Length: 437
Image (cartoon, rainbow, N blue to C red; front, top):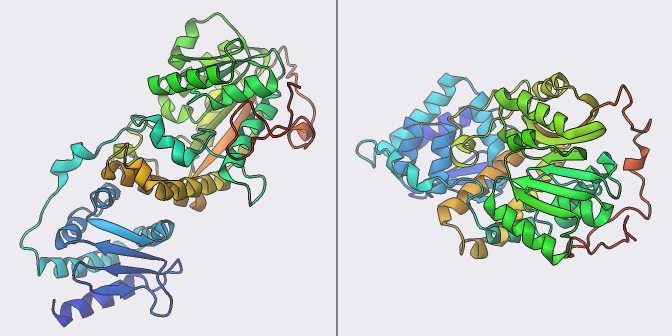
């Protein structure tokens, strides 16, 4: 490749990143040519273009989906800190279009000098699609850990392990609900059953979980049997809309990471159904990711919409609370765990990387890279504040009586009633004796 093309690319990249203040990075092409954002600092991350084809694809379709697909098919690779690349991408997206176009054109000229004519790789899209819960539980265990909790953890201390933080989150939810022995508790979208196990084993609740995943229901049933909780804990394969025909009323209800799949249009019906299944004086905790009101709504052309959550739709907190209040709920508490989720996702990425050889026994290389990119990108989005995760505590007042205490002091009091799992311990084997002495 001639010197003039390299000089042109260096100048335009330098202009594009002239006021860039994020982590240093490098770009390396297939022939070894390298450009660094800072000559004085070792790059935190290097973006590697494996061939002229990859660079040409970027010129033709510089979209989120195109870049994600280039990564999962290894046309583009990342060396070093995967999280730092998202700050660079955000900088590029915020730059004026003429400046971005000039940088793309300069890099494109280098590819065209080697590659004759554009190559389009969309024909392999269908082979890459891996829907979110199609994976066996053996894929999740190595990086979720023994709690099998696939939602935001709760880090009370900076040095908390993921296992401890996930246990704290389950306990945090039970404390917010103020679960008591004998109360009827429903978990809408219960995953592999971790919250119903905690509610039953440590708080004495009569716990019922529902899920749409057959694999999750089977695993949850096995875990219930292992802890001899058949009498007061169960999980069934059921859609939340089927609850409308039920006759039982629950004292406490929770939904963790499920309402993101409901969609804005169905939120009023979702909250109305839960409201009808909750007894007067009961409380409902809805834990869900929400987009910032200032962020652009996620469209169907995003990488996550195409490869991770095909039917997912993030609403704003305002939209969620409005739908809940319209259904008759009273808002009692709102907590944003945004920083906790950014940290949780980093732990998951570390786990994915550490267990790659094991995970590859269950999924393809493309699927593994989809999960790696999706989680790293989500961590960056939480860190920026583009999205948050909110625990909204709602009550169904009984003739104006909420049945709740005046303060929230009991949520944060560390006493003998607090239960925790030790890293590696299973549900039902608390490190500290809990409610069921």
